[in-house]
Every structure is written in C-alpha cells, then in structure tokens.
Image 1: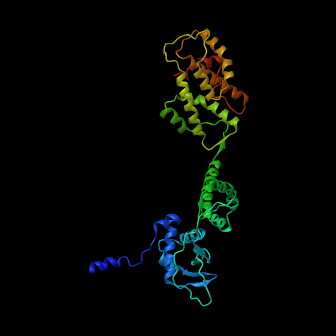
Image 2 (image 1 turned 90 degrees about the vertical axis):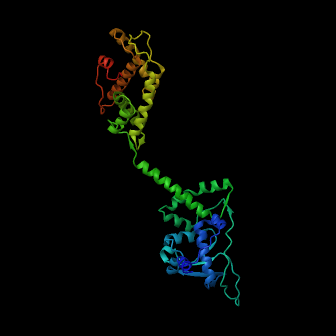
Image 3 (image 1 turned 180 degrees about the horizontal axis):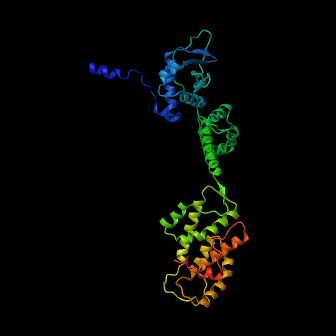
Length: 365
C-alpha cells in the first residue's frame, strides 16, 4: 500500500484529455489548449457578456495549467484557436499582457433571470469553407506576419497566387488565415535566400584567375593537365566578361567549364600513338570543334587558321601522334592573343611568334 501511495504521489496533477480526431482536425497543440480551457470553464464561474461566457486567467494560472509552454507559445496557440473559429479572445496578446481572457465561440442564450452556467461543453470545431474569390488577409494576419519581419506589402503581393492556388484545388479549410501565414513565411524565406545569394554575386573581373584550390581540384583530383587548365582561363574570362553576367561562384563555373572541355578533348585524341606527318588534306575531328564550342571560340575563326597550320607542319616535316591536340593548342593560343590585342588592359598569357606557337610542346600530353 505504501509503495502504491508513493507511485501515485509522483503524478498529482489532473491529466489532460486530448481526443485524437480533434487533434488531427485542429492540431495537437490546439486540441491540448482547448481541453485545458474546457476544464477551466467547468471548474470556474464565468462572466456573461454579449451572449458569451467569459473566463480570465492570469499569468500564475496559465503557468500552472500550461507549464510546458512559453508565453509566446500560449499566444500563438490561442491565436490559432481564434483563427479556427473556436475561441474568442478579449485580452491583448498574452506575451505582452500576461493575461488570457477568453470565451468559447458557442452562443449561450441568456435571459435576465437565467443563471450563468458553471459548466460549458467543448465547442464543435468550426466548419470548413472554400476559398472565396475575393479573400484578403485582415489586419491581424498582417500583424502576425510583421512579427516575422515580413512587410505588409510583401504579404499582399502573395494574395493572388495563394487565392488562385486554393480555388483551383477546390479544397476547403477551417482557417485560410493560418494557411496564408504559412504560405507567406515560406515565400519570405525563399526571397531572403535569393537576396542573400544575389548580394554575393559579382561581375567577371579583368585578369580573373581561378583560385589555387580550384586548379588543384582539377589537376590533382580530376587528373586534368595543368597546361590545359591554364589555356582555358583567358577564353573563360573573355566569354563571361562580354556576357556581363553576375555570379556568386566563378570558381565553380570554371571547374564545370574545364571538366566539360576535358571530356571532349580526351575524345578528340587519336588512339593510334604512332607519330606521323600531317596529311596535306588534314582536317580536325568533330570532337575538336566541340571542344572549341565549349570554350566559346568561334568555329569560323578556328577554320581560318587551318591552312597556315597544315602548311607550317607540312613544311617542317615533323611527325606527331596527335594533330588534333596540336590544332586545339594553336587555336586556343591565337584566340587568347586576339583577345589581348582587342583589349589593351588585358595582357596576353602567351606573347609567342607563329613558329613558337606552332612548335610549343607544353600543351601536348
């Protein structure tokens, strides 16, 4: 008997009765508060006014009945019950006033001689309604959004999309205000994330170079020739400066750019390793032109260099195992040099003569 008495003394409070169906309909927190307030109405005598029975809880009573909620939580859950049409609140926001004056939204017929009822049944949840075509958030909803630092102008901009979406779905809801608050908060978070990203965006600066970390990722981890990476820098800078596009991560763009080029470049290499002279009618493979397109180099410009390229190597009588590689190297260097000549503020990465450009082996693998 003593042991049983000790166990019972550990839980001296009255349990909170929450109906699962009601919790699924109006929310678990809302059903919990509704159960607590119903218990208050059954144990206290309210004041009748305008056809409702009103009850007032001070901070001490709220803390005793709902010790698991902070004042902001009490205010939030009570406001949700009001928006769902279950509760009337006559006090200022609880987090400020530390007082909760409420009545159930269930008209009590009063007469001059009728006593004020000391017990009140739990109210029936408000019925669901379809989205009205002219729905607008009221001042209270805008005020709650302002607590999240969301301007009213932004909130009102979301109304057409919100109304159209729910009218097209043809669904009903207890409180469109609650749904609108959730919708607008989500949109505001997306807007803030977009603004933060834009604030970090910059135009492509002159003489831009990728970070050493980006080059290291490409050369050491992706196995890309460092010379290939260096040759890709001028064309990359030129393209994006002319585009006038902003980015918050030029290094990532460059890595993606070089990766795509490298895959095409590897496909352009001859698989036969036997060195041979360049044929008089030699033309690069289509993979070579694809690499040049990825480098944003004009194909007509590359084709205009082909005759002098073939003549030089025919006259030199030299042999190589990959004329595609040699041609890619030559076109990239000539493109970078032309860019430098057109832009006096940009120094060429390779100030080489025609013979030096054609015989330079640094780009060959």
